Image 1 (tube, rainbow, N blue to C red):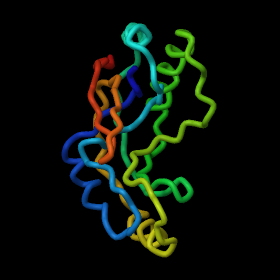
Image 2: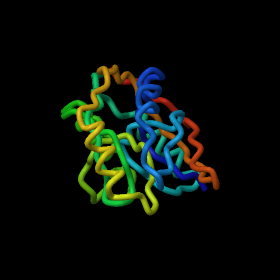
Image 3: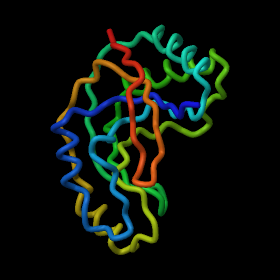
Image 4: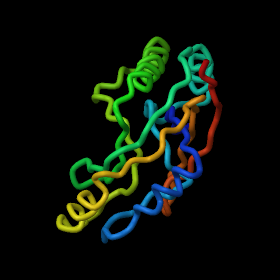
Amino acid sequence: MLRLFVGIALPPELKLQLSLLCSGVPGARWVDPGNYHLTLRFIGEVDEGLASDIDAALLQVRAPRFEVTLAGVGRFGDRMLWVGVDKSPPLVHLRDKVESALVRLGLPAETRRYAPHVSLARLRNASEAKLQAFIEAHALFSGAPFAVERFSLVASYLTKSGAIYEDQADYPLG
Protein backbone atom coordinates (compact mmCIF):
# COMPACT_ATOMS: atom_id res chain seq x y z
CA MET A 1 0.00 0.00 0.00
CA LEU A 2 1.10 3.54 -0.77
CA ARG A 3 0.07 6.64 1.22
CA LEU A 4 -0.28 9.34 -1.45
CA PHE A 5 -0.97 13.04 -1.88
CA VAL A 6 -0.82 15.49 -4.77
CA GLY A 7 1.33 18.54 -4.10
CA ILE A 8 3.49 21.39 -5.31
CA ALA A 9 7.17 21.57 -4.39
CA LEU A 10 8.62 24.82 -3.05
CA PRO A 11 11.84 26.38 -4.34
CA PRO A 12 14.93 25.87 -2.13
CA GLU A 13 15.30 29.57 -1.25
CA LEU A 14 11.71 29.66 0.01
CA LYS A 15 12.24 26.49 2.06
CA LEU A 16 15.24 28.19 3.67
CA GLN A 17 13.22 31.34 4.39
CA LEU A 18 10.45 29.27 6.02
CA SER A 19 12.92 27.25 8.09
CA LEU A 20 14.21 30.48 9.65
CA LEU A 21 10.75 31.05 11.17
CA CYS A 22 10.78 27.74 13.03
CA SER A 23 11.66 28.35 16.65
CA GLY A 24 10.30 29.71 19.89
CA VAL A 25 7.38 27.35 20.45
CA PRO A 26 8.10 24.58 22.95
CA GLY A 27 5.88 21.61 22.12
CA ALA A 28 6.15 22.23 18.37
CA ARG A 29 7.53 19.42 16.23
CA TRP A 30 8.92 21.42 13.31
CA VAL A 31 8.52 19.97 9.82
CA ASP A 32 11.80 19.16 8.09
CA PRO A 33 12.38 21.90 5.46
CA GLY A 34 12.89 19.20 2.82
CA ASN A 35 9.25 18.22 3.36
CA TYR A 36 7.72 21.67 2.86
CA HIS A 37 5.10 21.52 0.12
CA LEU A 38 1.73 22.90 -0.86
CA THR A 39 -0.87 20.10 -0.84
CA LEU A 40 -3.46 20.03 -3.59
CA ARG A 41 -5.18 16.83 -2.45
CA PHE A 42 -4.49 14.19 0.20
CA ILE A 43 -5.41 10.77 -1.21
CA GLY A 44 -4.47 8.33 1.54
CA GLU A 45 -3.54 4.66 1.32
CA VAL A 46 -4.08 2.91 -2.01
CA ASP A 47 -2.77 -0.26 -3.63
CA GLU A 48 -0.32 -0.13 -6.53
CA GLY A 49 -3.04 -0.76 -9.12
CA LEU A 50 -5.06 2.25 -8.00
CA ALA A 51 -1.84 4.29 -7.74
CA SER A 52 -1.20 3.53 -11.41
CA ASP A 53 -4.76 4.63 -12.28
CA ILE A 54 -4.26 7.84 -10.28
CA ASP A 55 -1.06 8.53 -12.22
CA ALA A 56 -2.90 8.02 -15.53
CA ALA A 57 -5.72 10.34 -14.42
CA LEU A 58 -3.31 13.08 -13.30
CA LEU A 59 -1.51 12.88 -16.65
CA GLN A 60 -4.75 14.16 -18.22
CA VAL A 61 -4.96 17.29 -16.02
CA ARG A 62 -4.37 20.43 -18.07
CA ALA A 63 -3.86 23.82 -16.44
CA PRO A 64 -1.68 26.87 -17.11
CA ARG A 65 1.48 27.75 -15.22
CA PHE A 66 1.06 30.43 -12.57
CA GLU A 67 2.72 32.13 -9.60
CA VAL A 68 1.94 31.70 -5.91
CA THR A 69 2.92 33.82 -2.92
CA LEU A 70 3.09 32.48 0.62
CA ALA A 71 1.92 35.03 3.17
CA GLY A 72 0.88 35.16 6.81
CA VAL A 73 0.90 32.48 9.48
CA GLY A 74 -1.83 30.77 11.40
CA ARG A 75 -2.84 27.59 13.11
CA PHE A 76 -5.39 24.84 12.96
CA GLY A 77 -6.53 24.75 16.58
CA ASP A 78 -3.89 23.27 18.83
CA ARG A 79 -2.70 20.81 16.16
CA MET A 80 -0.65 22.71 13.59
CA LEU A 81 1.17 25.94 12.71
CA TRP A 82 1.18 26.93 9.05
CA VAL A 83 2.12 29.59 6.51
CA GLY A 84 -0.75 30.67 4.32
CA VAL A 85 -1.10 31.41 0.62
CA ASP A 86 -2.21 34.72 -0.92
CA LYS A 87 -5.50 34.38 -2.80
CA SER A 88 -4.74 32.50 -6.01
CA PRO A 89 -7.54 31.62 -8.44
CA PRO A 90 -5.12 29.62 -10.65
CA LEU A 91 -4.11 27.49 -7.64
CA VAL A 92 -7.76 26.79 -6.81
CA HIS A 93 -8.41 26.00 -10.50
CA LEU A 94 -5.59 23.44 -10.50
CA ARG A 95 -6.82 21.94 -7.24
CA ASP A 96 -10.33 21.65 -8.69
CA LYS A 97 -8.99 19.93 -11.81
CA VAL A 98 -7.05 17.43 -9.68
CA GLU A 99 -10.11 16.83 -7.50
CA SER A 100 -12.32 16.21 -10.55
CA ALA A 101 -9.83 13.74 -12.04
CA LEU A 102 -9.67 11.77 -8.78
CA VAL A 103 -13.45 11.75 -8.25
CA ARG A 104 -13.98 10.54 -11.85
CA LEU A 105 -11.62 7.71 -10.99
CA GLY A 106 -13.92 6.71 -8.12
CA LEU A 107 -12.13 8.23 -5.13
CA PRO A 108 -14.46 9.88 -2.61
CA ALA A 109 -14.76 13.66 -2.96
CA GLU A 110 -12.88 15.81 -0.47
CA THR A 111 -15.44 17.22 1.94
CA ARG A 112 -13.27 19.84 3.67
CA ARG A 113 -12.97 23.34 2.23
CA TYR A 114 -9.62 23.83 0.49
CA ALA A 115 -7.34 25.94 2.70
CA PRO A 116 -3.95 26.13 0.94
CA HIS A 117 -1.03 26.27 3.36
CA VAL A 118 2.45 24.97 4.10
CA SER A 119 2.68 23.08 7.40
CA LEU A 120 5.45 24.39 9.66
CA ALA A 121 4.90 22.37 12.84
CA ARG A 122 2.72 19.78 14.47
CA LEU A 123 1.77 20.83 17.99
CA ARG A 124 1.60 18.88 21.21
CA ASN A 125 0.95 20.66 24.51
CA ALA A 126 2.31 23.94 23.15
CA SER A 127 1.97 27.02 25.32
CA GLU A 128 -0.92 29.23 24.22
CA ALA A 129 1.14 32.33 25.01
CA LYS A 130 4.08 31.08 22.88
CA LEU A 131 1.74 30.22 19.99
CA GLN A 132 0.18 33.68 20.09
CA ALA A 133 3.62 35.30 20.27
CA PHE A 134 4.78 33.27 17.24
CA ILE A 135 1.70 34.22 15.21
CA GLU A 136 2.03 37.90 16.13
CA ALA A 137 5.77 37.94 15.37
CA HIS A 138 5.28 36.43 11.90
CA ALA A 139 1.84 37.79 10.95
CA LEU A 140 3.32 39.94 8.17
CA PHE A 141 5.44 37.15 6.69
CA SER A 142 5.49 37.25 2.90
CA GLY A 143 7.63 35.13 0.62
CA ALA A 144 8.66 36.07 -2.89
CA PRO A 145 6.21 34.84 -5.54
CA PHE A 146 7.33 31.57 -7.09
CA ALA A 147 6.48 29.94 -10.40
CA VAL A 148 4.37 26.80 -10.34
CA GLU A 149 5.32 24.87 -13.46
CA ARG A 150 4.39 21.36 -12.32
CA PHE A 151 2.67 19.36 -9.63
CA SER A 152 3.56 15.93 -8.26
CA LEU A 153 2.15 12.68 -6.96
CA VAL A 154 4.00 12.04 -3.70
CA ALA A 155 4.26 8.99 -1.45
CA SER A 156 4.45 9.60 2.28
CA TYR A 157 6.20 7.08 4.52
CA LEU A 158 5.55 7.56 8.23
CA THR A 159 8.49 7.00 10.59
CA LYS A 160 9.09 7.68 14.28
CA SER A 161 11.11 10.77 13.37
CA GLY A 162 8.46 12.10 10.97
CA ALA A 163 7.26 11.58 7.42
CA ILE A 164 9.55 10.90 4.49
CA TYR A 165 8.24 12.09 1.12
CA GLU A 166 9.15 10.57 -2.22
CA ASP A 167 7.95 11.93 -5.57
CA GLN A 168 6.27 9.22 -7.63
CA ALA A 169 5.54 11.31 -10.75
CA ASP A 170 5.62 14.92 -11.95
CA TYR A 171 3.01 16.56 -14.18
CA PRO A 172 3.99 19.69 -16.14
CA LEU A 173 1.62 22.63 -16.45
CA GLY A 174 1.00 24.30 -19.82
